Image 1 (cartoon, rainbow, N blue to C red):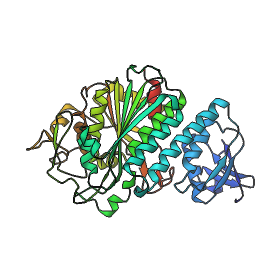
Image 2 (image 1 turned 45 degrees about the vertical axis):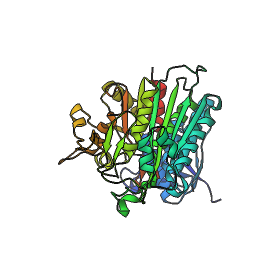
Image 3 (image 1 turned 180 degrees about the vertical axis):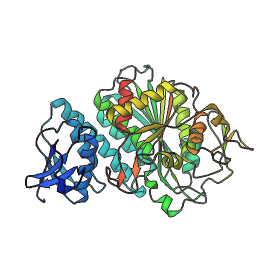
Image 4 (image 1 turned 120 degrees about the horizontal axis):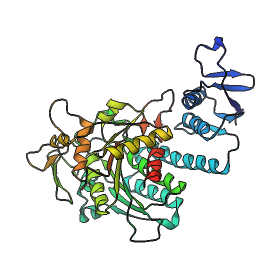
Amino acid sequence: MSAVMSVFLTKEAAAPQWGLGTALTFAAQGAQIHLDGKKDLTLIQQAARQLDNQRIRNVALDGKGWDIEAIWAFVQGYRNARKTTTYTYPALSEADEKSLQDRIKVTDWVREIINQPGDEVAPSQLATRAAELIKSCAPEHVSYKIIKGKDLLDDGWAGIYTVGRGSKRSPAMLRLDFNPTGDDNAPVHTVLVGKGITFDTGGYSLKGSAGMMAMKADMGGAAMAAGSLALAVLTGLTKRVKLVLCCAENMVSSNAYKLGDIITYKNGKTVEVQNTDAEGRLVMADGLIYANSQNPERVIDVATLTGAAKMALGNDYHAIMSFDDEFAQQALASAKSVGEGMWPLPLEEFHRDMLPSQYADLSNVSSGDFSPGATTAAAFLSYFVDNYQQGWLHIDASGTFRKSPTDKWAAGATGMGVRTLAHLLMAAK
């Protein structure tokens, strides 16, 4: 192992020779992170990223000021996809140490499963690994079922089956029940629905190589949803919450679905496929139908659904859309309280009319000039939510993965959003 560098926090400005506004400097005793009192956590995360970029792989966080949030900010910036960094930190209180380790455990799982190649994470593997993560957090309160292959069609889950039938690796639906009440008839407070496309070629609406490179991460919504429930359980969640993951590979083969195909869903809605690269909403429709059947107070769906959301917000924010303004504001407040990025995009009744089809109830993509792609994707999903105007929140998870590094994040999965959703689950009345 290489030498360990000590890292200190200081409120003193860097000496002029380091340059105006420099946040990271080096001295005989180690590295110093210069805080300004306004954006301390951001500066800590950025400094940690610089240390990794400079191949300083082993550090000890020393001195004063290293509370749980400062340590967490450092961990966020210091981790990388190759897992080549190690760190130690000053002792925390028992409660803070548990909270920090819970965050690290869950977000490490989320980042790792998103970063793994599509060859290593098949749909059924994603479903199983997510279920086992949550079950490990509360074995006595978690039960689950995974439906695979043609059994999906037998149960009426036509969206997941149709998208996944072109792959040799069977599509799968995870249905998980976290019920800490001990009452089998206890009401369900929230159902989380996650998009688990383990690799997305675009199908016959084939992506180019550049667009396909990051598509191992198209299951980021499923990972984020599973991770948020795991973290909430570890934090002491007392409400009954269910999780549905809609898992498939979108591949090209003689058995793959085609442009012009019509899918008939369990709720009777028919959908014309006008773009096979708009597959996420097709699988999520099944998950939302199942969520409705559980009569929950709230439904939250999480999906890396559109490039349009990423074009609007980049990787620094997840887009949220809802007809329920109060619910959307609760989500934004949760994001702010944990220092994560979420931002609202518009969603109105007239957007539901922007999915016309001559052959089915609706198309899976909108048409016309300047069509709002992220919003119409959410509008499509609303057709599969019984009471879409109340208690439903859609998250287009733009910030789950980065193709290239930034001043705050290494390339790859971020884990961003897990704490927001866990906080939202814990805060719900």
